[in-house]
Image (tube, rainbow, N blue to C red; front, side, top):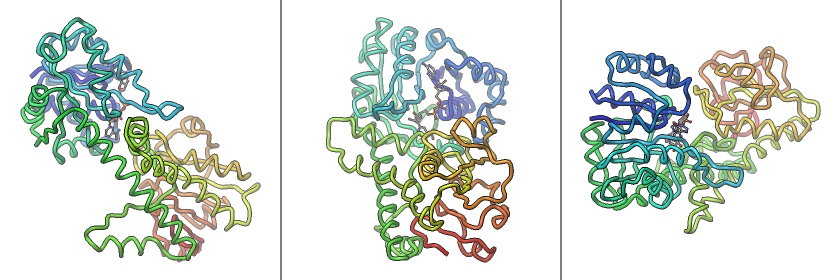
Length: 420
Ligand SMILES: NC(=O)c1ccc[n+]([C@@H]2O[C@H](COP(=O)([O-])OP(=O)(O)OC[C@H]3O[C@@H](n4cnc5c(N)ncnc54)[C@H](O)[C@@H]3O)[C@@H](O)[C@H]2O)c1
């Protein structure tokens, strides 16, 4: 099969590589010329993605994967086009479709009759049909008869995308039943996945929002319960373990907010839609308030933050990735600064410029602070000299072992974990 993947970022590139490794002729299209050049030479722009480097090099050298900035030219010879161009929210919390719309327009100018176009990027419900599909007609072909369009959300976790591609069923929904059938056949034949075909593109779009909003709300509930636990001096970790020992309870882990490209973004897509979304908005408010809540607790414990030196460890949105999209480390920084603290930042996966770019002053050494807030507990932090770092450790993700820290001679508290 000849396949184009438009947007060879963290999600699109592993998908392109996987398809190429299954013997298909794949072209990755991107506006980022540096990335295209690197990939064309078999270089891996995402070193943290498990198994990608080796497979990428292999498929480029076998000739199964090429990369280009010429999307219009590339899609002309492809029977299927996948879109993996990112969509974020703008300052007003609305989906910013600018890049994806540009990609759809370019693809529309190049495709030939019979092409199947599948949008993989998570979208507000109705966007595939009402906004993106019409742009595919920019070259004069007609939707339905000459262009077949479906939506199929990516259900992948950065760092293990190649593994996840085989793990979960692929969800598809077409603009019409023919498009849905073609998309299902494509994934079965090209990727070898099992497929769940939903009744429409809208159903598939909503299924992805449902997954994301479920997690955001679950975390919001865990956060609310953790705040109750704090009032009563109860350790929420044991409460959660006890509650989850019953098979109908699946409480997630509380923490100082929710970061990343996905979970904090998708509730906004629901909120901007036509239907009810009060709960999704409430979950966002609860989770967004958590960094401030944690810093308030720190202020109380220290008896004030004015002039205190506080280091935030792990600035990426989660451990062991270098991605800082919507990272709550920045929310912690703002909350700490508002209360007068001198704030430093450290992340072994980011260079000093990137640390400064987030607004932090890079730490010269990991010693001598009044308090340390552990935001992303990277593997590199496992052997830290905690007593040398600070006498008080704040666990923003409940990732540390309180017992071990207290035994080492430092004070500790987490989200719904009492001061020890
Ligand atoms: N990152 C995740 O963990 C994850 C997980 C599941 C689903 N997703 C979905 O995948 C989407 C893509 O995420 P990502 O992390 O790969 O984003 P990314 O920013 O890493 O990659 C997007 C790529 O699209 C390129 N691009 C921008 N405009 C373009 C255009 N007009 N034509 C061609 N390429 C263009 C960019 O240069 C970039 O390389 C997200 O919006 C999300 O819906 C992401």
